[in-house]
Length: 386
Image 1 (cartoon, rainbow, N blue to C red):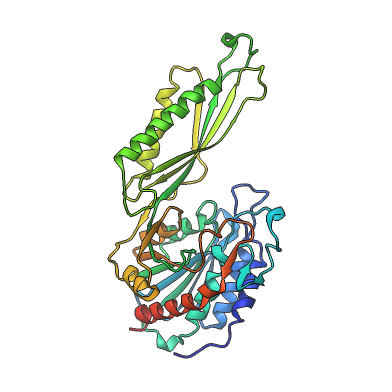
Image 2 (image 1 turned 120 degrees about the vertical axis):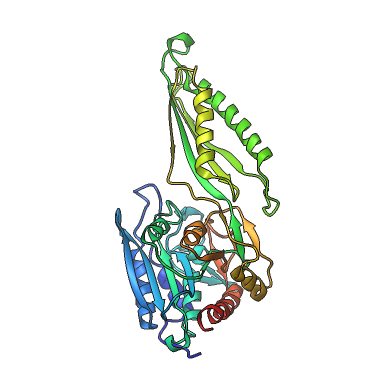
C-alpha cells in the first residue's frame, strides 16, 4: 500500500467540517445547506485520486449528496455517512459548537460524533491505498438531510447509486457492527371540533374530549402490537409508540376546538410500516366516528423502514472479527434500509457513542479514531484488493 500525503491532518479536516454549519430541520428557519461540507470532502477526495460527483437534490438545490470512487470494475465497498447535524441549544454548550476543542482526549463540537468525524477516518483509511492497489472500486458517499427527512438517501435510491457488494454506514456504534435497527415514523393527529362557552358543553364539540378517546385507542393498539411482535435481539424487544407531544385549546372557559397529538412509532424488522400506519389510522377513524370532530392525520416525512442484514453475512462477521465486538441491534434509525435496497450487504459501524449524539457538548473520543481507521483499512483490503 502506498500512502497519500495529500490529505490535511485529521484534526484539521474535522475542524473544517464542523466549522461549516449544516443543520437539517423540517423548520425552514433552522435548516441550513450542506454544500460547503460536501465541497470540502470532494476537494480532498479529488486530491487523493478519487473521481467525485456532486448530486444536488432536485427539490432542494442547496442540498447535495456526493459520490466519490477510486478503482474500477464491479462490486467493491461503499463507506457512507451523512453530512448534516441536528439543531442545537447554544446556551447548553460549554464550548463553541462550530469549533473543535480538544479536552481530555475528547474532540468536542457539533457533529464530531454524529457523524462528521467518520469522514476524516474514512478518508485516511482510503488514502492508504493507491488506485493501482485496487481490483474493485472503493466508494465514499456523503448524504444530506439524514437527521430530518432522509431526502439524500432517498435520492440515491431514485438514481440507483452507488452500486457495490458491501456498504458500511459510519454512524456512532462504539465500533460494534449493527446488523438491524427499528424503523421510525413521526405522525401527527389533528382533531377539529367547535368552540363555545364552557358553561354549556352542548354549544360546541370538544376536540380534547375526542382526543382522550383517541389516546385510549392508541394505547390499546400499542399493547396489541407488543403482544403480536417480539424480537429478542433488541434491548426493547417490542415495537414502541410514544405519545410524545400534545397541543390543545386556548382557555379553560372555552370549549376546546382543536387538538393535535404527535407520536413516535418504532417498528421491528419484518413489520410492514405502511400496513401498520394504515391500521393505526383506521383505529383512530373508528374511534372518533361518532364524536363529531373532523380528522387530519399525516406523517412529518416519509417513514424510515426497519433495517436488517443477515447476521451471518460476510461483512457483519468480518467487522465482528476485526472489532472484537459481537454484532448487535439499535433502536435509532439510519440510512441502512436505503443502501440495502440498492443490493448491498449493509452494516452500521462507526466510532463514537450514540450517547453523545444529539446532546450538548457532543464529542468524539480520540481512542476510537485509530482502531476505526485500522478496521476500515482491513475491510478495504478484503473487499477491494482481492
